[in-house]
Amino acid sequence: MSRKHFPLWTVLAVVLVAALLIGGGVFSSSSPSAAARAAAIESVIRCPSCEDLSVAASSAPTAIAVRAEVSRQVAEGRSDGQIKEYLVARYGSAIVLEPATTGWAAVVWVLPVVVAIAAIGLLVLVLVRRRRRGDGDLDADVRSPDVDPVLLDERRRFLTQSLADADAEYLAGDLSDADYLALRQRDLTRLGLLASTSSTASTASTASTSVRDTPDTLDATTGTAASTDPSKGPATARHRRNRRFLLGALACFAAALIVAVPLFSSNRLPGQTATGSVNLSPSQQLARSLDQAAAVANTGQLGQAAQLYQSVLSAHPDSAVALAQLGWIEYRIGTAGSSTSLITDARAKLDQAVDLAPGDYAAHLYIGTILLAHDGNAAGAADQFRLFVGAGPPARVLAEAAPTLRTAFAQAGQPLPAGVPAG
Amino acid sequence: MLVVGAGLIAVLATRPPAAVTEVRSPLVGNPAPSIRGITVDGHAYALAQPPGTFVVLNYFASWCVPCQQEGPELVRFDFQHRQAGDARLVSVVFDDTTSAARSYQATLGATWPTLADSKGELALNYGVRAPPTTFLIAPDGRVVAYLVAPVTAAGLDALIARAKATGA
Image (cartoon, rainbow over all chains, first blue to last red; front, side, top):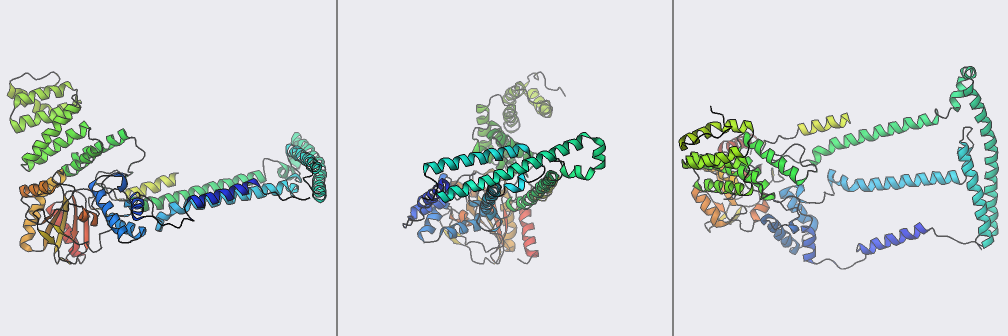
Protein backbone atom coordinates (compact mmCIF):
# COMPACT_ATOMS: atom_id res chain seq x y z
CA MET A 1 0.00 0.00 0.00
CA SER A 2 2.98 2.24 0.48
CA ARG A 3 3.68 4.53 -2.50
CA LYS A 4 6.91 6.19 -3.65
CA HIS A 5 6.57 9.89 -4.47
CA PHE A 6 9.09 11.58 -6.78
CA PRO A 7 9.28 15.23 -5.79
CA LEU A 8 8.25 17.52 -8.62
CA TRP A 9 11.47 19.54 -8.49
CA THR A 10 13.54 16.39 -9.19
CA VAL A 11 11.55 15.71 -12.35
CA LEU A 12 11.87 19.34 -13.42
CA ALA A 13 15.63 19.31 -12.83
CA VAL A 14 16.05 16.15 -14.95
CA VAL A 15 13.98 17.67 -17.78
CA LEU A 16 15.96 20.92 -17.61
CA VAL A 17 19.36 19.19 -17.72
CA ALA A 18 18.25 16.97 -20.59
CA ALA A 19 16.94 19.96 -22.54
CA LEU A 20 20.18 21.88 -22.00
CA LEU A 21 22.32 18.93 -23.09
CA ILE A 22 20.26 18.31 -26.21
CA GLY A 23 19.91 22.02 -27.04
CA GLY A 24 23.61 22.60 -26.45
CA GLY A 25 24.46 20.02 -29.06
CA VAL A 26 26.28 17.66 -26.70
CA PHE A 27 24.82 14.64 -28.49
CA SER A 28 25.27 16.17 -31.93
CA SER A 29 27.89 14.29 -33.92
CA SER A 30 28.16 16.67 -36.91
CA SER A 31 31.09 19.13 -36.77
CA PRO A 32 30.54 22.73 -37.88
CA SER A 33 31.52 23.75 -41.41
CA ALA A 34 34.65 25.85 -42.00
CA ALA A 35 32.52 28.91 -42.73
CA ALA A 36 30.52 28.41 -39.53
CA ARG A 37 33.74 28.04 -37.54
CA ALA A 38 35.23 31.17 -39.09
CA ALA A 39 32.02 33.09 -38.40
CA ALA A 40 32.02 31.92 -34.78
CA ILE A 41 35.63 33.04 -34.30
CA GLU A 42 35.02 36.36 -36.07
CA SER A 43 32.13 37.10 -33.73
CA VAL A 44 34.45 37.05 -30.70
CA ILE A 45 37.39 38.97 -32.22
CA ARG A 46 37.37 42.72 -31.68
CA CYS A 47 37.78 44.98 -34.70
CA PRO A 48 41.28 46.46 -34.17
CA SER A 49 40.42 49.96 -35.34
CA CYS A 50 36.83 50.25 -34.05
CA GLU A 51 35.35 50.56 -30.59
CA ASP A 52 33.57 47.52 -29.17
CA LEU A 53 32.68 45.93 -32.49
CA SER A 54 33.56 42.43 -33.55
CA VAL A 55 35.34 41.94 -36.87
CA ALA A 56 32.19 40.14 -38.01
CA ALA A 57 30.16 43.31 -37.51
CA SER A 58 32.67 45.79 -38.92
CA SER A 59 33.61 46.74 -42.48
CA ALA A 60 36.81 48.56 -41.48
CA PRO A 61 39.88 47.52 -43.52
CA THR A 62 41.54 46.12 -40.39
CA ALA A 63 38.45 44.00 -39.68
CA ILE A 64 38.43 42.75 -43.28
CA ALA A 65 42.12 41.80 -42.96
CA VAL A 66 41.45 39.92 -39.72
CA ARG A 67 38.47 38.10 -41.27
CA ALA A 68 40.63 37.04 -44.21
CA GLU A 69 43.33 35.78 -41.84
CA VAL A 70 40.80 33.84 -39.75
CA SER A 71 39.32 32.20 -42.85
CA ARG A 72 42.82 31.33 -44.12
CA GLN A 73 43.83 29.75 -40.83
CA VAL A 74 40.54 27.83 -40.53
CA ALA A 75 41.11 26.46 -44.04
CA GLU A 76 44.63 25.42 -42.97
CA GLY A 77 43.06 23.38 -40.18
CA ARG A 78 44.24 25.43 -37.20
CA SER A 79 42.14 25.19 -34.07
CA ASP A 80 40.05 28.04 -32.65
CA GLY A 81 42.52 28.39 -29.80
CA GLN A 82 45.51 28.58 -32.14
CA ILE A 83 43.85 31.28 -34.24
CA LYS A 84 43.00 33.35 -31.18
CA GLU A 85 46.55 32.89 -29.86
CA TYR A 86 47.91 34.14 -33.18
CA LEU A 87 45.86 37.33 -32.94
CA VAL A 88 46.55 37.83 -29.23
CA ALA A 89 50.30 37.55 -29.93
CA ARG A 90 49.96 40.59 -32.19
CA TYR A 91 47.22 42.76 -30.75
CA GLY A 92 47.23 41.71 -27.13
CA SER A 93 44.53 39.94 -25.15
CA ALA A 94 42.05 42.80 -25.69
CA ILE A 95 41.57 41.64 -29.29
CA VAL A 96 39.38 38.80 -27.99
CA LEU A 97 35.96 39.98 -26.86
CA GLU A 98 35.64 37.06 -24.42
CA PRO A 99 37.84 37.03 -21.33
CA ALA A 100 40.70 34.50 -21.40
CA THR A 101 40.22 31.12 -19.77
CA THR A 102 43.73 31.02 -18.34
CA GLY A 103 45.62 33.13 -15.83
CA TRP A 104 43.95 35.80 -13.74
CA ALA A 105 41.38 36.56 -16.43
CA ALA A 106 39.93 33.10 -15.81
CA VAL A 107 38.56 34.47 -12.54
CA VAL A 108 35.63 35.97 -14.43
CA TRP A 109 34.68 32.48 -15.63
CA VAL A 110 35.38 30.67 -12.38
CA LEU A 111 33.84 33.21 -10.04
CA PRO A 112 30.20 32.80 -11.15
CA VAL A 113 30.52 29.00 -10.84
CA VAL A 114 32.08 29.30 -7.40
CA VAL A 115 29.38 31.75 -6.31
CA ALA A 116 26.66 29.50 -7.72
CA ILE A 117 28.07 26.43 -5.93
CA ALA A 118 28.41 28.42 -2.70
CA ALA A 119 24.84 29.69 -3.06
CA ILE A 120 23.50 26.19 -3.68
CA GLY A 121 25.54 24.85 -0.75
CA LEU A 122 24.20 27.59 1.49
CA LEU A 123 20.65 26.91 0.35
CA VAL A 124 21.04 23.18 1.00
CA LEU A 125 22.52 23.91 4.42
CA VAL A 126 19.66 26.22 5.34
CA LEU A 127 17.06 23.76 4.09
CA VAL A 128 18.63 20.84 5.93
CA ARG A 129 18.80 22.81 9.17
CA ARG A 130 15.23 23.98 8.77
CA ARG A 131 14.11 20.45 8.02
CA ARG A 132 15.93 19.10 11.05
CA ARG A 133 14.25 21.71 13.15
CA GLY A 134 10.87 20.87 11.64
CA ASP A 135 11.36 17.08 11.80
CA GLY A 136 13.12 15.58 14.70
CA ASP A 137 14.64 18.47 16.35
CA LEU A 138 11.92 20.59 17.43
CA ASP A 139 13.69 20.01 20.67
CA ALA A 140 16.61 22.34 20.19
CA ASP A 141 14.67 25.55 19.80
CA VAL A 142 11.50 24.78 21.72
CA ARG A 143 13.28 23.29 24.73
CA SER A 144 15.14 26.49 25.36
CA PRO A 145 13.88 28.25 28.47
CA ASP A 146 13.57 31.60 26.66
CA VAL A 147 11.60 30.17 23.76
CA ASP A 148 9.25 32.57 21.99
CA PRO A 149 5.58 31.74 22.83
CA VAL A 150 4.58 32.71 19.30
CA LEU A 151 6.94 30.05 17.95
CA LEU A 152 5.37 27.47 20.27
CA ASP A 153 1.89 28.35 19.03
CA GLU A 154 3.06 28.12 15.47
CA ARG A 155 4.58 24.68 16.03
CA ARG A 156 1.47 23.48 17.81
CA ARG A 157 -0.72 24.58 14.89
CA PHE A 158 1.69 22.92 12.45
CA LEU A 159 1.64 19.59 14.30
CA THR A 160 -2.14 19.64 14.69
CA GLN A 161 -2.51 20.26 10.96
CA SER A 162 0.03 17.52 10.26
CA LEU A 163 -2.05 15.06 12.30
CA ALA A 164 -5.21 16.08 10.45
CA ASP A 165 -3.43 15.65 7.08
CA ALA A 166 -2.19 12.20 8.10
CA ASP A 167 -5.80 11.22 9.05
CA ALA A 168 -7.11 12.47 5.72
CA GLU A 169 -4.40 10.68 3.71
CA TYR A 170 -4.97 7.44 5.66
CA LEU A 171 -8.72 7.59 5.04
CA ALA A 172 -8.07 8.27 1.35
CA GLY A 173 -5.82 5.23 1.20
CA ASP A 174 -2.65 7.16 0.47
CA LEU A 175 -0.85 5.95 3.60
CA SER A 176 -0.12 2.44 4.76
CA ASP A 177 -1.09 1.38 8.27
CA ALA A 178 2.51 1.32 9.41
CA ASP A 179 3.30 4.77 7.95
CA TYR A 180 0.16 6.27 9.41
CA LEU A 181 0.89 4.91 12.87
CA ALA A 182 4.51 6.05 12.72
CA LEU A 183 3.50 9.58 11.66
CA ARG A 184 0.80 9.80 14.29
CA GLN A 185 3.14 8.53 16.99
CA ARG A 186 5.80 11.09 15.99
CA ASP A 187 3.44 14.07 15.92
CA LEU A 188 1.76 13.14 19.18
CA THR A 189 5.15 12.82 20.88
CA ARG A 190 6.09 16.25 19.65
CA LEU A 191 2.82 17.76 20.78
CA GLY A 192 3.46 16.31 24.24
CA LEU A 193 6.94 17.76 24.19
CA LEU A 194 5.54 21.14 23.19
CA ALA A 195 3.03 21.04 26.04
CA SER A 196 5.78 20.43 28.64
CA THR A 197 8.04 23.12 27.09
CA SER A 198 5.17 25.55 27.06
CA SER A 199 4.60 25.24 30.81
CA THR A 200 8.36 25.65 31.53
CA ALA A 201 8.54 28.68 29.27
CA SER A 202 5.59 30.34 30.93
CA THR A 203 7.26 29.84 34.33
CA ALA A 204 10.54 31.27 33.03
CA SER A 205 8.71 34.16 31.45
CA THR A 206 6.97 34.96 34.73
CA ALA A 207 10.27 34.80 36.60
CA SER A 208 11.94 36.99 34.03
CA THR A 209 9.13 39.51 34.19
CA SER A 210 9.32 39.68 37.96
CA VAL A 211 13.09 40.18 37.77
CA ARG A 212 12.67 43.02 35.31
CA ASP A 213 9.88 44.57 37.33
CA THR A 214 11.90 44.53 40.55
CA PRO A 215 15.07 46.63 40.37
CA ASP A 216 16.34 45.38 43.77
CA THR A 217 16.05 41.76 42.65
CA LEU A 218 17.79 42.64 39.38
CA ASP A 219 20.81 43.97 41.27
CA ALA A 220 20.98 40.87 43.41
CA THR A 221 20.63 38.44 40.52
CA THR A 222 22.59 40.12 37.77
CA GLY A 223 24.07 36.86 36.49
CA THR A 224 20.71 35.15 36.08
CA ALA A 225 19.11 38.17 34.47
CA ALA A 226 21.94 38.48 31.98
CA SER A 227 21.63 34.86 30.89
CA THR A 228 17.88 35.04 30.35
CA ASP A 229 17.70 38.45 28.69
CA PRO A 230 16.81 37.74 25.05
CA SER A 231 18.51 40.92 23.91
CA LYS A 232 21.90 39.56 25.04
CA GLY A 233 23.70 36.21 24.71
CA PRO A 234 23.08 34.37 21.42
CA ALA A 235 21.72 37.43 19.62
CA THR A 236 24.74 39.53 20.50
CA ALA A 237 27.10 36.74 19.51
CA ARG A 238 25.28 36.36 16.20
CA HIS A 239 25.45 40.10 15.64
CA ARG A 240 29.21 40.05 16.28
CA ARG A 241 29.64 37.12 13.92
CA ASN A 242 27.71 38.92 11.20
CA ARG A 243 29.79 42.03 11.66
CA ARG A 244 33.04 40.06 11.45
CA PHE A 245 31.76 38.29 8.34
CA LEU A 246 30.84 41.62 6.73
CA LEU A 247 34.25 43.11 7.53
CA GLY A 248 35.99 40.02 6.18
CA ALA A 249 33.94 40.16 2.98
CA LEU A 250 34.76 43.86 2.55
CA ALA A 251 38.47 43.20 3.07
CA CYS A 252 38.38 40.40 0.47
CA PHE A 253 36.54 42.67 -1.95
CA ALA A 254 39.09 45.45 -1.44
CA ALA A 255 42.02 43.08 -1.92
CA ALA A 256 40.45 41.60 -5.05
CA LEU A 257 39.81 45.05 -6.47
CA ILE A 258 43.34 46.22 -5.81
CA VAL A 259 44.79 43.11 -7.45
CA ALA A 260 42.32 43.14 -10.35
CA VAL A 261 42.62 46.78 -11.42
CA PRO A 262 46.30 46.71 -12.46
CA LEU A 263 45.89 43.23 -13.93
CA PHE A 264 42.98 44.05 -16.18
CA SER A 265 43.65 47.71 -16.93
CA SER A 266 45.81 48.34 -19.96
CA ASN A 267 48.20 51.24 -20.42
CA ARG A 268 46.50 54.45 -21.32
CA LEU A 269 46.84 55.84 -24.78
CA PRO A 270 47.74 59.52 -25.15
CA GLY A 271 44.89 61.66 -23.91
CA GLN A 272 43.08 58.84 -22.17
CA THR A 273 42.04 59.51 -18.60
CA ALA A 274 43.12 57.28 -15.74
CA THR A 275 39.63 55.96 -15.13
CA GLY A 276 38.81 55.10 -18.76
CA SER A 277 35.21 55.19 -19.91
CA VAL A 278 32.78 54.50 -17.10
CA ASN A 279 29.17 54.33 -18.26
CA LEU A 280 29.08 57.70 -19.96
CA SER A 281 26.24 58.67 -22.23
CA PRO A 282 27.21 59.37 -25.88
CA SER A 283 26.98 63.14 -25.31
CA GLN A 284 29.07 62.91 -22.12
CA GLN A 285 31.59 60.77 -23.98
CA LEU A 286 31.77 63.34 -26.77
CA ALA A 287 32.26 66.19 -24.29
CA ARG A 288 34.97 64.25 -22.47
CA SER A 289 36.80 63.39 -25.71
CA LEU A 290 36.69 67.02 -26.80
CA ASP A 291 38.03 68.13 -23.41
CA GLN A 292 40.87 65.62 -23.65
CA ALA A 293 41.78 66.75 -27.15
CA ALA A 294 41.66 70.42 -26.11
CA ALA A 295 43.88 69.67 -23.11
CA VAL A 296 46.43 67.91 -25.33
CA ALA A 297 46.28 70.77 -27.88
CA ASN A 298 46.90 73.30 -25.10
CA THR A 299 50.13 71.51 -24.22
CA GLY A 300 51.32 72.10 -27.78
CA GLN A 301 51.11 68.45 -28.87
CA LEU A 302 49.24 69.26 -32.05
CA GLY A 303 49.76 65.86 -33.68
CA GLN A 304 48.30 63.98 -30.75
CA ALA A 305 45.46 66.49 -30.43
CA ALA A 306 44.67 66.04 -34.12
CA GLN A 307 44.65 62.28 -33.59
CA LEU A 308 42.11 62.68 -30.80
CA TYR A 309 39.90 65.04 -32.81
CA GLN A 310 40.02 62.60 -35.70
CA SER A 311 38.87 59.78 -33.47
CA VAL A 312 36.03 62.03 -32.24
CA LEU A 313 35.04 62.72 -35.84
CA SER A 314 35.11 59.05 -36.75
CA ALA A 315 32.46 58.47 -34.07
CA HIS A 316 30.66 61.85 -34.47
CA PRO A 317 31.18 63.10 -38.06
CA ASP A 318 28.85 66.05 -37.40
CA SER A 319 30.71 67.44 -34.41
CA ALA A 320 31.18 71.10 -35.37
CA VAL A 321 33.53 71.63 -32.44
CA ALA A 322 35.84 68.78 -33.49
CA LEU A 323 35.77 69.96 -37.11
CA ALA A 324 36.64 73.53 -36.14
CA GLN A 325 39.43 72.52 -33.78
CA LEU A 326 40.91 69.95 -36.17
CA GLY A 327 40.72 72.51 -38.97
CA TRP A 328 42.62 75.01 -36.87
CA ILE A 329 45.26 72.43 -35.89
CA GLU A 330 45.67 71.40 -39.52
CA TYR A 331 46.13 75.06 -40.43
CA ARG A 332 48.82 75.48 -37.77
CA ILE A 333 50.66 72.32 -38.81
CA GLY A 334 50.20 73.18 -42.48
CA THR A 335 51.60 76.69 -41.94
CA ALA A 336 54.59 75.34 -39.99
CA GLY A 337 55.33 72.76 -42.68
CA SER A 338 54.30 74.97 -45.65
CA SER A 339 51.78 72.33 -46.69
CA THR A 340 49.26 73.85 -49.09
CA SER A 341 47.14 70.70 -49.16
CA LEU A 342 46.85 70.68 -45.36
CA ILE A 343 45.83 74.36 -45.28
CA THR A 344 43.21 73.72 -47.98
CA ASP A 345 41.91 70.77 -45.98
CA ALA A 346 41.85 72.93 -42.85
CA ARG A 347 39.72 75.57 -44.55
CA ALA A 348 37.30 72.96 -45.82
CA LYS A 349 36.86 71.61 -42.29
CA LEU A 350 36.27 75.09 -40.88
CA ASP A 351 33.68 75.86 -43.58
CA GLN A 352 31.98 72.56 -42.77
CA ALA A 353 31.97 73.48 -39.08
CA VAL A 354 30.28 76.81 -39.86
CA ASP A 355 27.69 75.05 -42.02
CA LEU A 356 26.90 72.67 -39.18
CA ALA A 357 26.87 75.30 -36.43
CA PRO A 358 26.66 78.87 -37.77
CA GLY A 359 26.48 80.20 -34.22
CA ASP A 360 29.78 78.62 -33.10
CA TYR A 361 32.20 81.44 -32.37
CA ALA A 362 35.41 79.38 -32.68
CA ALA A 363 35.07 78.53 -36.37
CA HIS A 364 34.44 82.20 -37.25
CA LEU A 365 37.47 83.26 -35.25
CA TYR A 366 39.69 80.69 -36.99
CA ILE A 367 38.39 81.52 -40.48
CA GLY A 368 38.85 85.23 -39.82
CA THR A 369 42.40 84.68 -38.58
CA ILE A 370 43.28 82.60 -41.66
CA LEU A 371 41.77 85.24 -43.96
CA LEU A 372 43.82 87.91 -42.26
CA ALA A 373 47.12 86.09 -41.73
CA HIS A 374 47.22 83.81 -44.76
CA ASP A 375 45.24 85.67 -47.42
CA GLY A 376 45.73 89.26 -46.24
CA ASN A 377 41.97 89.70 -46.68
CA ALA A 378 41.19 92.18 -43.88
CA ALA A 379 37.62 92.91 -45.06
CA GLY A 380 36.74 89.21 -45.20
CA ALA A 381 38.39 88.70 -41.80
CA ALA A 382 36.36 91.60 -40.35
CA ASP A 383 33.14 89.96 -41.57
CA GLN A 384 34.07 86.72 -39.83
CA PHE A 385 35.14 88.53 -36.67
CA ARG A 386 31.77 90.32 -36.52
CA LEU A 387 30.08 86.92 -36.58
CA PHE A 388 32.53 85.76 -33.91
CA VAL A 389 31.65 88.69 -31.62
CA GLY A 390 27.93 88.26 -32.38
CA ALA A 391 28.09 84.60 -31.29
CA GLY A 392 28.91 85.75 -27.76
CA PRO A 393 32.32 84.22 -27.03
CA PRO A 394 33.52 84.00 -23.41
CA ALA A 395 35.23 87.18 -22.16
CA ARG A 396 38.59 85.40 -21.88
CA VAL A 397 38.50 84.29 -25.54
CA LEU A 398 37.38 87.76 -26.64
CA ALA A 399 40.24 89.36 -24.73
CA GLU A 400 42.79 86.99 -26.27
CA ALA A 401 41.44 87.59 -29.78
CA ALA A 402 41.13 91.38 -29.35
CA PRO A 403 44.57 92.33 -30.79
CA THR A 404 43.87 90.30 -33.98
CA LEU A 405 40.40 91.83 -34.26
CA ARG A 406 41.76 95.36 -33.83
CA THR A 407 44.35 94.73 -36.56
CA ALA A 408 41.72 93.34 -38.96
CA PHE A 409 39.23 96.18 -38.44
CA ALA A 410 41.97 98.82 -38.63
CA GLN A 411 43.28 97.36 -41.91
CA ALA A 412 39.73 97.10 -43.28
CA GLY A 413 39.00 100.69 -42.21
CA GLN A 414 35.93 99.56 -40.30
CA PRO A 415 34.82 100.46 -36.77
CA LEU A 416 35.52 97.94 -34.02
CA PRO A 417 32.32 96.10 -32.95
CA ALA A 418 30.90 96.88 -29.52
CA GLY A 419 32.26 94.71 -26.76
CA VAL A 420 35.77 94.33 -28.18
CA PRO A 421 38.36 95.86 -25.84
CA ALA A 422 39.87 98.95 -27.52
CA GLY A 423 43.37 98.14 -26.30
CA MET B 1 35.70 51.76 1.86
CA LEU B 2 38.62 54.02 2.75
CA VAL B 3 40.97 51.11 2.16
CA VAL B 4 39.40 50.43 -1.24
CA GLY B 5 39.61 54.10 -2.19
CA ALA B 6 43.22 54.41 -1.09
CA GLY B 7 44.15 51.22 -2.92
CA LEU B 8 42.54 52.36 -6.16
CA ILE B 9 44.20 55.76 -5.96
CA ALA B 10 47.57 54.09 -5.42
CA VAL B 11 47.01 51.73 -8.35
CA LEU B 12 45.77 54.37 -10.75
CA ALA B 13 48.45 56.84 -9.75
CA THR B 14 51.19 54.37 -10.59
CA ARG B 15 49.87 53.67 -14.07
CA PRO B 16 51.79 55.25 -16.96
CA PRO B 17 50.72 58.87 -17.52
CA ALA B 18 48.67 59.89 -20.53
CA ALA B 19 51.62 61.68 -22.11
CA VAL B 20 53.55 58.44 -22.59
CA THR B 21 53.26 57.37 -26.22
CA GLU B 22 55.25 54.14 -25.97
CA VAL B 23 52.80 51.44 -25.03
CA ARG B 24 52.83 47.73 -24.37
CA SER B 25 52.64 45.33 -27.26
CA PRO B 26 52.90 41.54 -27.17
CA LEU B 27 55.47 41.90 -29.95
CA VAL B 28 57.96 43.89 -27.89
CA GLY B 29 60.84 41.62 -26.93
CA ASN B 30 59.86 39.04 -29.54
CA PRO B 31 61.14 38.43 -33.06
CA ALA B 32 59.65 40.87 -35.55
CA PRO B 33 57.27 39.33 -38.08
CA SER B 34 58.70 39.31 -41.58
CA ILE B 35 58.51 42.52 -43.58
CA ARG B 36 57.93 41.83 -47.24
CA GLY B 37 55.55 43.05 -49.90
CA ILE B 38 55.10 45.34 -52.88
CA THR B 39 56.18 48.97 -52.61
CA VAL B 40 53.93 51.84 -53.69
CA ASP B 41 56.13 52.03 -56.82
CA GLY B 42 55.31 48.42 -57.67
CA HIS B 43 58.63 46.79 -56.69
CA ALA B 44 58.99 43.68 -54.55
CA TYR B 45 60.66 44.29 -51.21
CA ALA B 46 61.81 42.01 -48.40
CA LEU B 47 63.73 43.00 -45.29
CA ALA B 48 66.57 40.65 -44.36
CA GLN B 49 66.08 38.58 -41.20
CA PRO B 50 67.80 39.63 -39.00
CA PRO B 51 68.14 43.09 -40.50
CA GLY B 52 71.64 43.80 -39.10
CA THR B 53 70.78 47.44 -38.41
CA PHE B 54 68.02 49.16 -36.46
CA VAL B 55 64.81 49.38 -38.48
CA VAL B 56 62.10 51.95 -37.92
CA LEU B 57 58.85 50.49 -39.24
CA ASN B 58 56.32 53.27 -39.64
CA TYR B 59 52.62 52.80 -40.49
CA PHE B 60 51.03 55.93 -41.96
CA ALA B 61 48.19 57.32 -44.10
CA SER B 62 48.18 60.41 -46.27
CA TRP B 63 44.93 61.63 -44.65
CA CYS B 64 46.32 61.33 -41.12
CA VAL B 65 47.30 64.70 -39.67
CA PRO B 66 49.65 63.32 -36.98
CA CYS B 67 51.41 61.38 -39.76
CA GLN B 68 51.83 64.65 -41.65
CA GLN B 69 53.28 66.18 -38.51
CA GLU B 70 55.83 63.40 -38.03
CA GLY B 71 56.69 63.22 -41.76
CA PRO B 72 59.47 65.87 -41.69
CA GLU B 73 60.91 64.21 -38.57
CA LEU B 74 61.14 60.89 -40.39
CA VAL B 75 62.86 62.61 -43.30
CA ARG B 76 65.35 64.12 -40.84
CA PHE B 77 65.91 60.75 -39.14
CA ASP B 78 66.45 59.04 -42.49
CA PHE B 79 68.93 61.71 -43.59
CA GLN B 80 70.93 61.45 -40.36
CA HIS B 81 71.13 57.68 -40.30
CA ARG B 82 71.43 56.92 -44.00
CA GLN B 83 75.00 58.26 -43.92
CA ALA B 84 75.92 56.33 -40.77
CA GLY B 85 74.20 53.18 -41.98
CA ASP B 86 73.13 52.22 -38.45
CA ALA B 87 69.37 52.54 -38.96
CA ARG B 88 66.89 52.55 -41.79
CA LEU B 89 63.28 53.35 -42.36
CA VAL B 90 60.52 51.29 -43.87
CA SER B 91 57.02 52.74 -44.18
CA VAL B 92 53.78 50.83 -44.60
CA VAL B 93 50.56 52.35 -45.93
CA PHE B 94 47.66 51.87 -43.51
CA ASP B 95 44.03 52.25 -44.61
CA ASP B 96 44.83 54.46 -47.61
CA THR B 97 45.03 54.20 -51.38
CA THR B 98 48.41 53.43 -52.90
CA SER B 99 48.24 56.47 -55.20
CA ALA B 100 47.46 58.88 -52.36
CA ALA B 101 50.24 57.39 -50.24
CA ARG B 102 52.74 57.54 -53.12
CA SER B 103 51.85 61.17 -53.81
CA TYR B 104 52.15 62.03 -50.11
CA GLN B 105 55.57 60.35 -49.79
CA ALA B 106 56.78 62.15 -52.92
CA THR B 107 55.66 65.52 -51.52
CA LEU B 108 57.36 64.73 -48.25
CA GLY B 109 60.60 63.76 -49.99
CA ALA B 110 60.61 60.23 -48.59
CA THR B 111 63.12 58.04 -50.40
CA TRP B 112 62.96 54.97 -48.20
CA PRO B 113 60.90 51.89 -49.13
CA THR B 114 57.16 52.28 -48.64
CA LEU B 115 55.06 49.12 -48.78
CA ALA B 116 51.52 49.33 -50.12
CA ASP B 117 50.04 46.55 -47.91
CA SER B 118 46.78 46.76 -49.83
CA LYS B 119 45.31 43.72 -48.02
CA GLY B 120 46.39 44.89 -44.60
CA GLU B 121 48.50 41.78 -43.96
CA LEU B 122 51.50 43.68 -42.60
CA ALA B 123 49.25 45.73 -40.36
CA LEU B 124 47.69 42.53 -39.03
CA ASN B 125 51.07 40.87 -38.51
CA TYR B 126 52.14 43.79 -36.33
CA GLY B 127 48.76 44.34 -34.64
CA VAL B 128 48.38 47.90 -35.91
CA ARG B 129 45.12 49.64 -35.01
CA ALA B 130 45.52 53.20 -36.31
CA PRO B 131 48.12 55.45 -37.92
CA PRO B 132 50.66 56.65 -37.03
CA THR B 133 52.17 53.56 -35.43
CA THR B 134 55.88 52.95 -35.27
CA PHE B 135 57.96 49.93 -34.30
CA LEU B 136 61.67 49.92 -33.60
CA ILE B 137 63.35 46.66 -34.57
CA ALA B 138 66.82 45.86 -33.26
CA PRO B 139 69.66 44.57 -35.50
CA ASP B 140 69.06 41.06 -34.12
CA GLY B 141 65.46 41.16 -35.37
CA ARG B 142 63.64 41.71 -32.07
CA VAL B 143 60.96 44.37 -31.66
CA VAL B 144 62.26 46.78 -29.01
CA ALA B 145 59.67 49.59 -29.02
CA TYR B 146 56.10 50.29 -30.09
CA LEU B 147 54.79 53.86 -30.38
CA VAL B 148 51.28 55.05 -31.14
CA ALA B 149 51.80 58.78 -31.64
CA PRO B 150 53.84 61.03 -33.92
CA VAL B 151 57.55 60.30 -33.53
CA THR B 152 60.46 62.71 -33.66
CA ALA B 153 64.00 62.09 -34.89
CA ALA B 154 65.32 62.84 -31.40
CA GLY B 155 62.81 60.48 -29.82
CA LEU B 156 63.81 57.65 -32.16
CA ASP B 157 67.49 58.33 -31.45
CA ALA B 158 66.77 58.11 -27.72
CA LEU B 159 65.02 54.77 -28.20
CA ILE B 160 67.94 53.43 -30.24
CA ALA B 161 70.36 54.60 -27.54
CA ARG B 162 68.24 52.89 -24.89
CA ALA B 163 68.12 49.68 -26.93
CA LYS B 164 71.89 49.76 -27.40
CA ALA B 165 72.38 50.30 -23.68
CA THR B 166 70.31 47.21 -22.95
CA GLY B 167 72.40 45.13 -25.34
CA ALA B 168 70.19 45.12 -28.43
